[in-house]
Length: 246
Length: 312
Image (cartoon, rainbow over all chains, first blue to last red):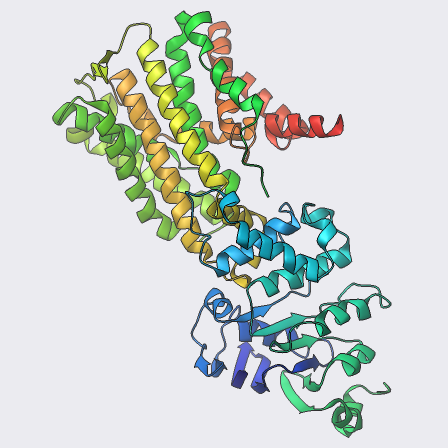
C-alpha cells in the first residue's frame, strides 16, 4: 500500500535517514521500533511530507506522492498521529473531529452555510468518537479531557480523514503502562482494510499487536520481519543489549 | 458545536443600538463614528480573533476603502450604496493580493510585515497628492443622501446608515463564524501544526479570511467617507491600526461582539476624557488597557462570560 524507496535526509552533517526503504502491504499491522534517536519520528515526518526528503521516492497505492504537500497526502489517504498531543485545545472533541470530516469532504471552504446544515458530517464525527469510547466527551473541550482520552482523540482525528495508511507515533506515549493495552485494543479493532504502522517502545505491546516489525537504528532500517524473526535476530539483540524478547 | 441560535441578549443588544435616536440625539455623530469603528474592529476580529493573524496594519484596508469611496464621490457619482460596494470589493482585492505574502509568516515577522504594508500605503497616499490631496486630505465632494435620506446636521441619517451597514456585515460575520469555514479558522488558531495533518489547506483558508476581513474594513472606511464628506490621511495611519487592535482586545477578541463592545467603550471614553483633559486622554486609555489585559486577559466579554460560568 505504502512504499518508501531510498529516502535520505541530513540535517547539516547529521544523517537522520539513510537509504530507508519500507514496504507496507495493505491491511497489515506494522511496528517500527528502535532506540531513542534512531529516526523513527523523523521517518514519519518524511513520509507525511512534514519534512522534505533530500532524496528518495514515496508511493501510496501506486501513486507517487513524493512531491506533494502534507495536506495533499492526507487527502490521498495517508494520516498520522503525534507523539506529543497536537490537538485543538479550545474546540470540543466533536468539533475537532467534525472539522477533520468537513475538510475531507471538501466542505471546510464553505462560509455561507451554518454548521447545522452538515448533520451527516457531524453524525459521522460522533460515530468515530463513539467507536473509540469517547461518546461521553463529545461536547467537552479538548483541554478538559483526561490525558488518555486526548490520546484517543489523536487517533479519532486521523481516522476522520478516512485513511488507507495510518501512521501512529507512540500512540500510548505518557499513558500508564497498565492502560496502554486498552489503547492498543482500540487500534487492533480498526478495520482490516487499514494499513497501520505504529512506533512503540513497550516490547510486550509490540509483539502482541504487530504482525510485521521494522527495526530502525541510527537512521537506517536494520531489519524487518515477523515477531519471531525479530526476536531471534542477533543484530536486534545486540541493539537492545540485555533486553529479553517474547 | 458552537451554538448558532440567536440569544435573547443579542436581540436586546441590537434594539439598544436604536436608543441614541431617542436618548442622545446630540450624540448621533459620535454614535455613527462608533458604528463605523465597530465594523472596522469586527473585520479585524475575523482574522485576529478567529484565525489568529495579528495585524498592525489593518488601517491599510480601511483607508483604501475610504479613498476609493472619496474618489468615486469626487470624480464619478454621488450615490453611496454602489460606491460602498465597490470600495469593499477593491479593498478585498488588495487584501487578497497582500494575503499571498502575509499567510507565509507568523508571530513577529507577521506583525512587522503588516506594519510595513500599512506604512507603505500611508506614504503612497501622502505622496500621490494629485490624486489623494496628500496631507490635506481628499476634499471638495459631498455625498448628499443615501437612498433618498439626506445627511442631516445632527447625524441621524449618518447613524442610521452606519448602523444598518454594521448590522448587515455583522450578520455576514456571524454566518462565517458558524460555518464549516469558521470552524476551520478556529482550528488554525488553536493548532496550525495539526491542520495540515487533517488535510486542511491552511494557507488557502487564511487567504480567504484575510480577503473577507479586508473587504469589510474597506466598507467601514467608505462609510466614514460618506458620513463625513472628507477623507484624511489619518484613515491609513498607524494610529488607526493600533487603535482598532486596542479596541478589539479591550472588548474581547474571537467573540463576535468584542469589537462592538470595545468600540463603544473606547469611543465614549475618548469623547469624555478628551473633554476633561484634551492633552492627556491617552493616559486613561493606557490605564484602561493595562487594567483589562492584566485582570481580564480575554477582554471585557471574556471576563463577563467567565463570571457567568462561575456563578451558574
